[in-house]
Image (cartoon, rainbow, N blue to C red; front, side, top):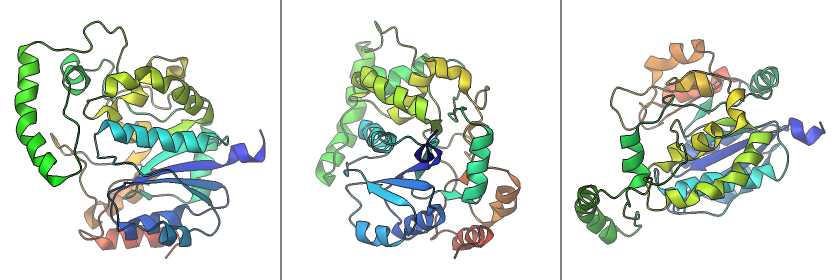
Length: 300
């Protein structure tokens, strides 16, 4: 393996909180890291020039900005664009993070962990078999595209429920004659170069099913992995345990649509967890926990 293959690629998707993104970049700034950023097109307050100024050692690349709303099919395209850019050079691992994540270990410790578990894929699955009703709602029906302009967003919010009810009444199901086994799990992952290349090769085969979909970002990679021999290379062979599968500390309250924002109340659990990364943080809600983690990692 040449020296470049020992490098790690961090794929970062950000849409707000530029100060936290700057901190994340400083914590990931390492001679053996390459950083790839997708900044949402709507994030006019995030300056690429300021972001570049945070990084002294790592190589940093920006991919073209898309209007990648969370849960939209365009967010899948944004993730794929990050992976495409990064995989042009072989890396030991490709880690997808959001701009409000933080590492919980030093870069040396993170590299040592993945070297110890080289060849394993860190991808989470919710269940052994995805719920058919969930798949039908997400990709079996035709969802209205998410609009950028406020007027069209308001129109879409009013029209979409009736449009979906009509499709259910007419028993619309794009998956009815589809023999693909779809799967679901967490968006965030750490994967090998071999699987990254395989995923990029096969992603176009599934893209048509994600047109006019919702939350396909939780389906696309799991589906490719599940239908491949790489499924046997999972680090965690069980189900419904995102932290164990991805080495990311995350707290999903029962029935919540998004994970809980972590605070100082979580600090002891965070540091004792053994996890490599954590999400999500918000300095406006609790800056102290962010500062404590930063000091723990020996950075300011």
